[in-house]
Amino acid sequence: MTENQAPRAYQIRTFGCQMNVHDSERLAGQLEDAGYVPVRAGSKPDLIVFNTCAVRENADNKLYGTLGHLRPDKVANPDLQIAVGGCLAQKDRGEIVKRAPWVDVVFGTHNIGSLPTLLERARHNAEAEVEILESLETFPSTLPARRESSYASWVSVSVGCNNTCTFCIVPALRGKERDRRPGEILAEVEALVAEGVLEVTLLGQNVNSYGVEFGDRLAFGKLLRACGTIDGLERVRFTSPHPAAFTSDVIDAMAATPNVCHQLHMPLQSGSDRVLRAMKRSYRSARFLKILDEVRAVMPDAAITTDIIVGFPGETEEDFQATLDVVEQARFSSAFTFQYSKRPGTPAATMDGQLPKEVVQERYERLVELQNAISWDENKKIVGRRVELLVAEGEGRKDAETHRMSGRARDGRLVHFTPAGAHVDRAVRPGDVVETVVTYGAPHHLVADGDLLSHRRTRAGDNAEAGLRPKTSGVTLGLPGFGAPAARPEPVSGCAL
Image (cartoon, rainbow, N blue to C red; front, top):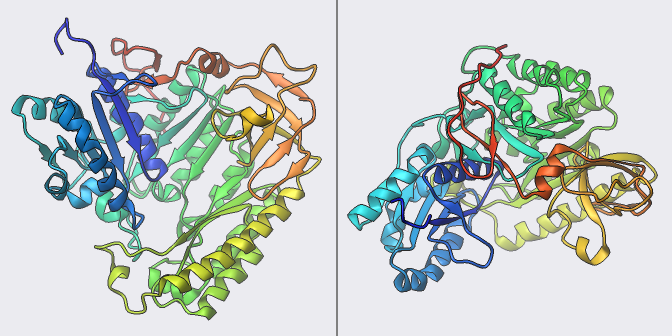
């Protein structure tokens, strides 16, 4: 951009998992380094970036439908640029510009760092730029990132996946697992905490297999313990582990490290051993339940959540009943339940025994009904309990109507609370920490309508109130800055395990 040119405004629309959300933070960081600015509310962007997901069946239809709605905008304003990245871009490649020729840039999961260059090239050449790499161009953590939250941040420990689950297209789109060095991870965490971030979530496709690339099978437990030594880091979470790689040393590290939250997301997928074999999930239901028993033996207050797929090819009523039986025994605090959808390119897509939609729907409804009842029972047990909440932003859809705010308890449960009482210091803000007592348990949330027992104003709250979010520069990290992009700071050396 020339000196006299107004900065171009960008908008990123993210679909899919936490990996995509974090990738979008990287995309935002790069665009701001290249001189773009976030679009203001009520204004039209000069650039729209779609960060796509390919896991769900309707992902293609959703993207192409949205692109179709943008065609009149592109015709009216030829300077508007549209970019499509992420997993669906990696899968569909040149098909995107064939079906939507008004798209300017298509990039894949392995080259998110190329976006600013591709946009400039497309503008200069007045034609679409499609660049899809087959392997990782640069580890995402080396890229700048504009963080979405002032108080909670994602920190990638690895990318890619070495498993071969027959229903999953992710390994084909994100490649084999690549692990970051522990020192780099801890340096990023320390840099975020230095700017007031209170909570980090360690992120990996199979986060507990971290260390496989450099040959340390105990690396993830060590990493959790190392996070416990970082002053000012109040909460550590991680997602998602794989049951087959889950070891006792990780459980011990969770229990022994005070800032590691007693929350565990453990994907079940199916309670039928026969279906688990067909899925190539290398554990069985008894092993899964044994892990949960071990976790609860040392952390009785642990909230355990899961993923479950209903209607996998060949699933019988007996198989489905086995899933219901495991759900009944596991007592999950909540579950992400999915109807199986056929994904081209996965082994399951060509398996015999694809089930009719009405069968899958009926089973899905039975599973949801059972899990809702369990979640409600488990949440009722928390009524009367004192909880510490990290106040959140935008998690309570009815907060304005009820005059409540929302926050996350240390076990990950969502709590809607009344921000009132003698202990309130001026005003409660996202990023502050409060304590209150639960007065009601619903299936998907808790309510705390009494006066607050305590309120601690935090630097994260100050930043949230001022509308500031940290921007990390990438490894070697230096410290994050707030507001407009600053000159790149001197590297800060990190510790290593």
